[in-house]
Length: 98
Image (cartoon, rainbow, N blue to C red; front, side, top):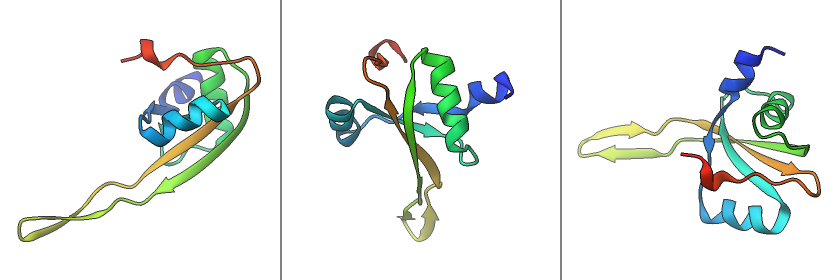
């Protein structure tokens, strides 16, 4: 796989209350990823960037909400997120990231 492509797969960690609870209880981390990324690409990108062993990857396509800006209707962008479960004994420290 192309290393340049793998470095672009992970857009950002997704920070929310649900993501924090999942990270504590299930050893999973949530990332915002490119819309065209496959599960295998996400797995390889996480293993390469954080030097951890990934057990499973689940992806979700998030549909953007319809929003109103005064009179005009608008729509937020669609995006994709990935739930990455790490193998036992591995962990990612996202507190050091910006």
